[in-house]
Amino acid sequence: MTNPTNLVRGEEMIPTSNPAGLNLRDRIALGIYGITASDAISQNVCVACKASAMTFRDQLSGREYLISGLCQTCQDAVFTN
Image (cartoon, rainbow, N blue to C red):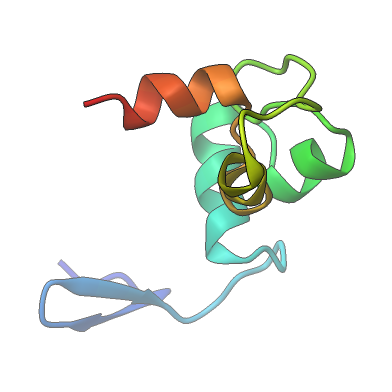
């Protein structure tokens, strides 16, 4: 099956166009959560649960928020062993 907007390299799909101008993180978040990670972070809310994301357990968790947009509660749910 041919998709003109993607090139196939092995198992990896490489998008050749991005009409919205979004980076991969934001495209994934928008598709899953309905909001981009960048928008959630700029609004100080969690990309997943939309709750306030102002308090974190430690500096590492705060840095993770800047990467994923997940609040402490959602980080705990995702990264729990």
